[in-house]
Image 1: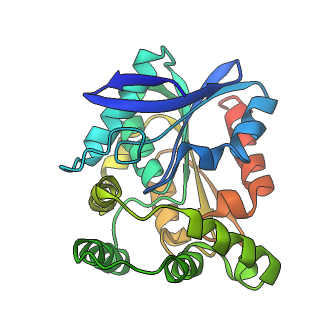
Image 2: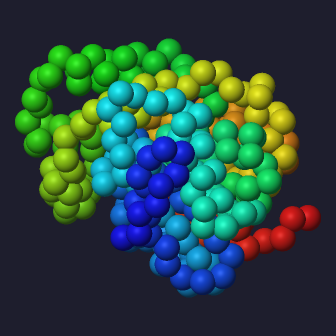
Length: 269
């Protein structure tokens, strides 16, 4: 696992394949390894070089417990692209990673050739704002929630009814979620970053070829908020994937990868 110094932090990444580079950005608390089960093989199979990394706040990358901003995370990705001489490259992000990717496409256009935004939004509505406040307050209260309970809540908020109704699949999902480490100070800082201001007007100035992929059963970044982002970005494509929740790229990787790969391999009209 290579480590480089960018933007004042230690950043850990993986770099596989050859060809045109694709940089992938995970969501809140997400590890780079989440991409490696389905998305990295799909991209390397069609000739891409894929760079995945642990974002600021997620060990072994610097946790930065003192806190940080969305701009810090954007600058981290920009630094990674510049240090590895990847520009202009394709960028894929999900959830918080999509927030970072769309800001990067807006402010550092010269670094990005195409961007895929999964499970994204351009503002924080009342429900998502209340959820973010509640999660931060729970963390700050120092309450230790049993792993099994936390796993079930995560499943209910992140997966689709189709998956929740599949007993065999759910046994595996809950076991997997139980193995996830509890949120540390870095993830707590990422929770703050995820409380996105209304950026829709600003996104009208994005000039990078963009694709928004929304998941029909996503409770955390619902499709109508993703549609707003696609409508704001000039010429953006919009894909709605049925039968998937917030983790749609893991629930239905075949459909998600097909949409992503087709976009990334198609030349601009």
